[in-house]
Length: 419
Image (cartoon, rainbow, N blue to C red; front, side, top):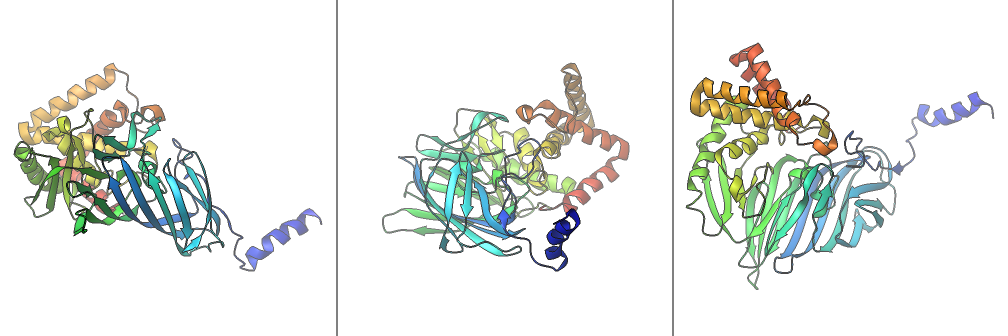
């Protein structure tokens, strides 16, 4: 067969409208900084997670049902999943073959999945979740256990420590959680708490629904003995705070601050993009916080007003408007840092804002901090992302003037809402 005839034979099925043959989904989402992170060939619609947690033994029994749509005909597909022991994998109710290499779980369904078909992958698993080491962060990330309490902080690649997923921010999805814990414990997760069921043995199942798309790294869970404080913001958004036992009065001022400052941020960034908000405060041996969607998580020493502003600003920038690739993270962290400067202005006037900007600019220049975009993976959370990113926004504010600048922020957050 000559070259022309061979080419025609390859093109003829396409010209005749015959579907492309099934092929495996890609083992990565094409992220420049994390080439192996995420997967191709499908788009996740929702994750339904069911977990029974034994806090004393630090063990779980769990099931994850993933509903997705094939973006091309699939002979196999990949998920990220850590070290937990897999009991079974099914696709649309039929047993599927699977193999795991590192965090890469390859699932081969009993029959290929057609392009555009909606399908379900169900994984049952158990064991002791272990956090994940990332080149982008100095501490382990994902599921972390401290005594009989557990917390989840997954940015950028720790979600696979506790559930199988397409672990990349470009594939956001809805979530439900059903978490069973002993009688003395409470479970907290993203979204609205829609029910608490009690078993005969006293164990309780806490149910949550996430009404808006969420990136996997923002999914969180907290299990412990908490003071639970419910309320609402000054403009009526429901608030739920999970605090270390016996500390509700100690944190009353910060709960009140959250209720006040969330509507203030909404005036600048547009309507709050979620149906609930709140916080988990954890007595853990590091001073961190993360903008886990609708339920930011704070180490107790980090639960202070400036950090609250930072994590709440992320609900707009990072959570509702999410980076497509990790190298664009300044579009989340730069905005959250800029919000902290705005809070300085709120409390101390424009002079306080200008002083904060000048101080950070001088520090960035003295350290030779580079531009905000395309950070190296080992410095994903560096000053270029936070400070230079915020300085970009300051410069735009100066060039445009306040009216046009804040209208731009509100319009952009509306256009990209939940995208």
